[in-house]
Image 1 (cartoon, one colour):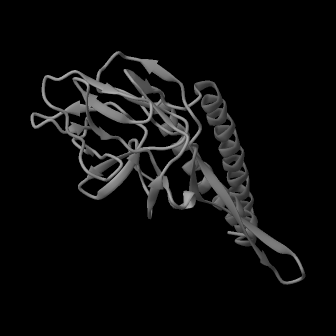
Image 2 (image 1 turned 180 degrees about the vertical axis):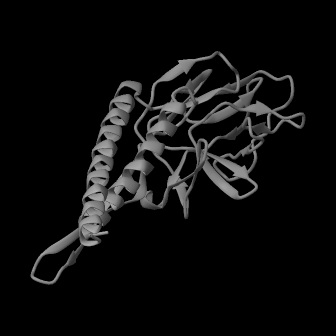
Image 3 (image 1 turned 45 degrees about the vertical axis):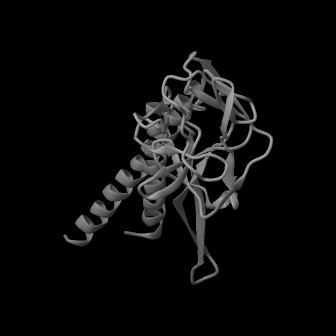
Amino acid sequence: MEPPGYVTLSRQAGLMREMQVVAHNIANLSTTGFRREGVVFSEYVKRQPGGESLSMAHGNARHVDLGQAGVSQTGGTFDFAIQGDGFFLVQTPEGERLTRAGAFTPSPEGELMTPDGHRLLDQGGSPVFVPPGSKVALAQDGSLSADGVPLTRIGLWQPSDPLSLRHQAGTLFAADAVEPAEGGVMLQGFLEDSNVEPVSEIARMIEVQRAYEMGQSFLDREDERMRGVIDTLGR
């Protein structure tokens, strides 16, 4: 295969990754606290004999959109939403993780847990406990009380280095280190929606699909041309 074919193949591989990411975004339109992703393309340029250059595309990184999503009122005592900067910190078997999904449920022991069984941590990094059967209230600064008695304060966290934020699975994110976040507030009885915009994602899917089909058409013509050359030289 000649250089134009390799260039197109590198572009096709990146477009395929982007199509998968867009499809994943669309599949999570209704996932609480989901953050949309995009593919970041880089370019590798190599100088060729004669002064010409060869440019290869590589979709090798994902960008996480941390933009604020809307919130929906649920009335749930343990449904918490964040407005502004920051994440909840939860304890998983793989270590501490960040999330914007604030649907929690108390365990039989009173620990607040995510639907996947991860414990919510307070601003000191300790599990959050609530007395069973008590009336729980959450202030906008994260202060949690039961029957009017202060319990703890749920912290808001952010990655110390924003570039270290990595999407792990579902609505969980990992970071090399975390630090307290400023400026965010918490709402009780609300959940943050997904920040995926369905119209723009579908439009992007159509755009990527057309670009992929164009590249595939070029590869098909290139293949026919090479077959024609081989057939002619073989006579």
